[in-house]
Amino acid sequence: MTALLELNNISNIVNKGTGEERQILKNLSLQVNQGDFITLLGTNGAGKSTLLNVINGALSPDQGSISLKGQDLTKLNEVKRAQYIAQVFQDPKMGTAPRMTVAENLLLAYKRGQKRTLRLRHLKQHCQEFESLTAKLPNGLSEHLNTATGSLSGGQRQTLSFLMATLNRPELLLLDEHTAALDPNTSKQLLALTDEVVQAEKLTCIMITHQLKDALKYGNRTIILNNGQVVLDVAGAARAQLSEQEVLSYFTDL
Ligand SMILES: Nc1ncnc2c1ncn2[C@@H]1O[C@H](COP(=O)(O)OP(=O)(O)OP(=O)(O)O)[C@@H](O)[C@H]1O
Image (tube, rainbow, N blue to C red; front, top):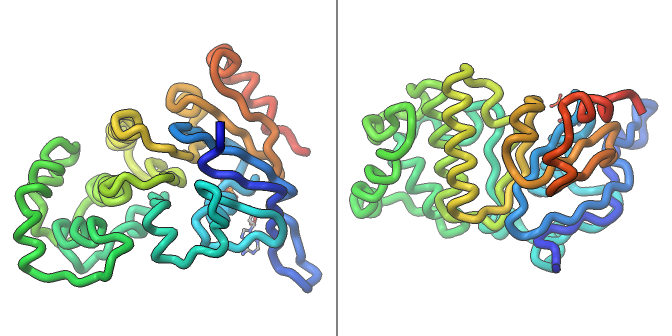
């Protein structure tokens, strides 16, 4: 099977040329298959967010190659990447424009990767669609289509960020602890929604979490990063048999 995403021998170094130079990702290689729903675990500082940042283009690798559908990702511009890759961050403030309404943010997401012209006419065309899209979601988002996003609760805003990220069915969905800032119930609802959408749309997804239970419950494959290296990459029956205790044994200092 050809991989959708392929990372070969990726290294990422910070504070280059100073006494503080440090290699964060260490010759990391990874193949992500179409339809994989990977849960990514690891201690604080293991390099999980750095890995997602290398994939989404916010960081350039210092060594190695990275390709999506056989195309060198480092050669794609931001607009092109946005057509392929969508991300939801931990901070609910990050995925949406605060002064714009929910409907306007949805229109922006709808036009991701296209020339951005936000016309009222376009907004009206999509209003009904946005109403039915949000009606199925938790947190009463459908009643706030004309509310400025900055006035929403963290849960509503994060649900909106998730909807925006998945609206155009990205080739790759990156979730960086996207439920970590939410209360337990809201977090559970958004995780359930995530699972539902990823499965229904057959999305390829990498989800960072610190919750061992969630890491083993959701997705088809679990990867553990430790000190910039993949120390466990497990799927299928081997993953189903994995206990939380065994998972924890991969968190020891390398
Ligand atoms: N620009 C930078 N300059 C210096 N150090 C950095 C920089 N970016 C990341 N680091 C360091 O790299 C390491 C990996 O960071 P990263 O955020 O990828 O870890 P993580 O696994 O996502 O951790 P967490 O679970 O805490 O979110 C950390 O020790 C961090 O301090």
